[in-house]
Image 1: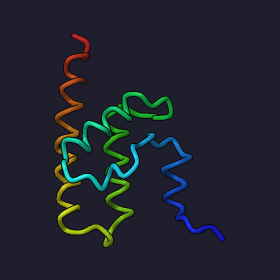
Image 2: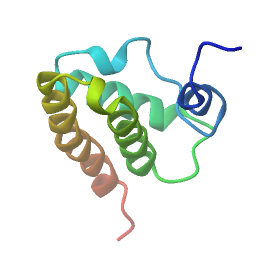
Image 3: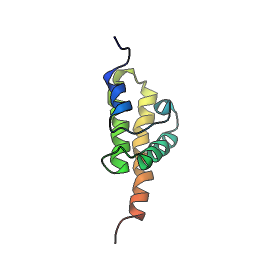
Image 4: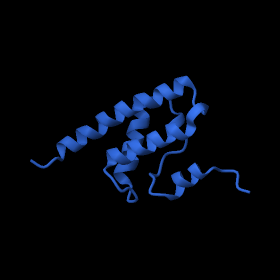
Length: 98
């Protein structure tokens, strides 16, 4: 019987992003956001925009970690959502057709 969960299979084999090891254990929301941004922009497996893909992965992790996340880490990851929106919306505005 395998010791890993189905969510690990989703992260590793689906149209998920290739993430840096231990990414969601980082303590700086901006660092996490920039790493997610980089992964989303370089992924050939994503289906949506970089912002959609990165936000989906972050939300997926928060939801799957659930009660196992400390209050502090949950707060860091929630702040990461704002950092991610800022980092990716700036890029999308620069490349928007006029």
